[in-house]
Image 1 (cartoon, rainbow, N blue to C red):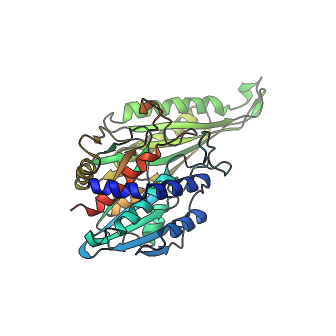
Image 2: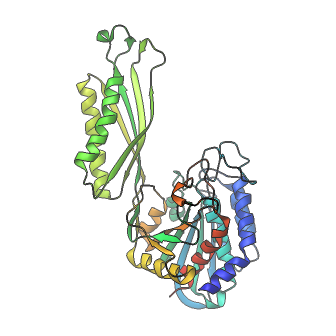
Image 3: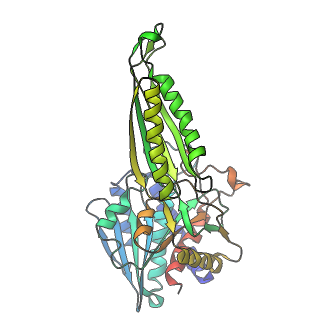
Length: 390
């Protein structure tokens, strides 16, 4: 498998150039037309069957091997985040309020590199490879759209790789079973009766009710949920009032709900509705509670996780595979793929060389997130190895 690293190194220049180009021109949601065009151009000349999506700007490319075997899907996401980048990179985003702060530019470039690597080894390929370039991972749910358009038809197993600056370069990490959490959204509007702040007894103040809800939700998590099957409720946005001497009629908060099992996900949703409506009632208010279902729990199939651990050791070297001790509370719409076919998602270490302790590196979704581009060679090789391994 070290031969794959050598092959990946030969296309490293092209991979890095594509990554930097995409990084400078990030696109959001399901519509990534420039990114789609760059992918199609980068795949031109390879022995691939290439098609584009109708419900989103996706790209699907297929490589037929010269021997019978399974169909393996490799997936990369292409969209960016609606945020501002604050790094000193020479190739920073040129699009205001858009940034590839989660590494999807690297994912796309690595998968294009893997397509080149595998195309050169077509004579060794058993079966076929389907390359899935998917927009809309950051909340827009691009994976279900592509699944509805048939991307998983005939697929036997699937693989996706996600970069992280918080793992050292040269290493990769994974675990069987639950890898990442579900991602539901919570919105609550508390309604009372507005009036002058000097006469609260003539009003029904929604703000104390809202404050009680925020703290009570944390108690619900710690007292109703098994600590070994955790849930996380984070209130991230609160709005109430307009000035210092007016009690508002209503107050609003929203946040995210993360769980690592569908059982706990159902339990905490019920608890949230009960806590908010009953606290509102106790304060003589009403509460409108909206829970929006997000991505499912991301669950790796154990045999595929074992496959990745072996491939990682063979490709990167002994002791380069890290077994994650617990799931992460981030979410992924690759979870929809894993609900349909056996597969695995893993993490690739890309810690910048100037950071001694990778745990202190700016993580994904940070405005200061950077990565070590030398690590992209490892990602290209791992994609190819997951196809070529028996």
